[in-house]
Image (tube, rainbow, N blue to C red; front, side):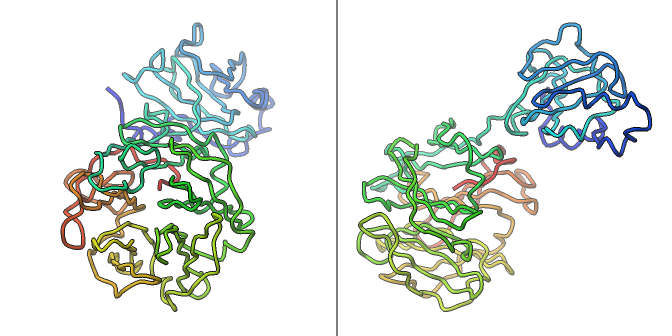
Length: 407
């Protein structure tokens, strides 16, 4: 029987005694220097409690351990990946699986622990040790409205992009599968947003902010779920802004626009899209107070007036507000829900249910409790309705944990 990943990982440190060499008294006995013999880039194991004697090493996954089967008493993981230690051969899940974090420096190694390891698997993210894919499961029905909202590959189904903790980007087309569209480096970005065609080619694009420089980049969609070569659209200074949100066409010129909140003032700014795929001179559309919001969602059209609308969550209360779009600005806000501080993330997914109304999906945080499940990493779906707001949420999936954002 598979033990849930989060339960297994909670016991790893205790079961394997992972600690630092200093904490174990490095130098107290010369033999304890042996963990340093494990080469950088390798997972190593010993049959003794103090990492002395014959050493096992591998830099690749190993389905069967031969003479080392059920022999590990001490381990060191000097690779850049997580080491999944399976009680079963061939990476099975009838027994336990232990997750050992990467430690290329070799400062951490395990004391006396399990002696039941029969296979070792090296993976990029911790969630993969539990048999999960590196991406979460996402399902959607064909949308009733046209053009389809949030559709990266042109199949009328709303899609999701998911970033894992290894910095890879995954395209989720709505059938439960995932496709790698960014092999690494995406953790360098501290803001990611989509929903809109900024390049003018009829395909949805992604905008990303580089954390180290404050530069803003446009990644044009290719129409397949993948992204083309990036283009610099903001030379710097964007780290002064919060809640970068691709909104849709607010100015009425047929081009997608971008919202951003100024950290120092709480002002809300509109950055209009241009025919060249860049951003035009910004326009003030909120004079202050927007720092009270801890999430902005470019939702699409909730009010059914043909204009894009904005959803915003109030940090202090968890209230969800609808700001109807109007040409060049936002109309008076409408309260559409409370208690939304139990959500870690929001996904505008268009008419995911196929009933003609715009829907939303959310990812829970540790505060979430329900009859279906509790805690973080759950996907809760909210179907739209004919009046502003949503139907009651339904928990649909538990695979949205251990990621680094989704949009």
